[in-house]
Image 1 (tube, rainbow, N blue to C red):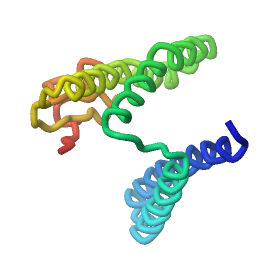
Image 2 (cartoon, rainbow, N blue to C red):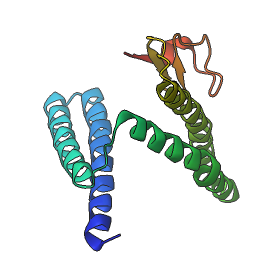
Image 3 (cartoon, rainbow, N blue to C red):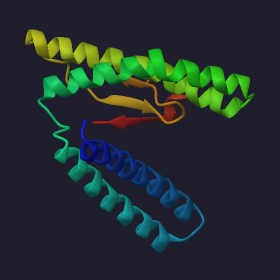
Length: 167
């Protein structure tokens, strides 16, 4: 990998993180009664998305839907098998309970995503249509389910009302 390719990856990661950070800052500004500052953070977040997209495109980061599903399968599998387990272990050693919880939730949900991507990939490979249905994402842990939100999230225990519909 060339130094420029490494720089593109770092820039993509940085811009992506800035987008999320500014959206979270906007939520806080809105709650504190600063709508114009919230608007500014949302505008900056949108600009960071443009930068991230440009960097990702320069890396030829978006392939065919089949290639993208395969990339998702690989990435999610790596996260729940190799990335999060040592993070959880270290957080436990450090007695950092909030990190243990958030890493644990993410670890469980990454396996859910892996299975959803794998199912979609296999359907695409075999020419089988996927059921046309919404997804629901738990706002407590990120658990993602197709069709209908459960009464209670099986990962974090959040009620159905904490699930956000994604069409």
